[in-house]
Length: 302
Image (cartoon, rainbow, N blue to C red; front, side, top):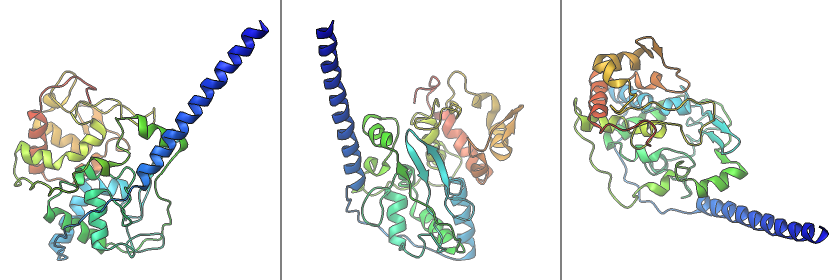
């Protein structure tokens, strides 16, 4: 019996040793990915600061979900705090105390928005640049004008950070985009944005941010990396269980405008309809046309 316990202890010790080594290796891989330097040539855009451009820039900032992440006054927020992953903290974009507005050039902001890269060349955590990479030059210029026009807000806030387990998860999970910069073809010119209109093509352009929660196929399901108490994202295709076909175009517009339709209410803490309501009716019609053009998918087939 003593011999068995001795060998059992040796085997368990070896297994624990291998596990520790594997965890340290994954942690080191995560650190290396975070510290990788990217040399990104930035293409400048025209930044018009007339009243019309500023108003449109604010609207784009709102319906693209930027305000939901950075706050109404661009002051920065703790967007997500999950011990298994870490903290998603958006920076203060103003020139106030703790803000980056006075420290970052327009080129720096374009690099961050379109490429997910800091001014020092390292990748940003969780910045959804895989969607903003496709912003038209005109829309991006208006967004920059809005950011630059905002008054300073004092809010000292820490950057996003991973927990110890987060460093490990980022190297074994393929469902959470920890570093979107790794997924962007930085050496290619973004494709031209489609012409505005009530078309599936323009609807796709307007709804790229939906993939963050609803998945690449927009069929919904549990959102990777989000707290367990968060509900699953609904199926946005016309597949089984989707409510969109029954709502119709006008019902879809109503629920985005008010957060309620056919007795169903949407919690804005989970689904930021308060951002998307800033789209025009024609823009929402384009989004609905795009969603209805998608092949029907089973729920959760992200």
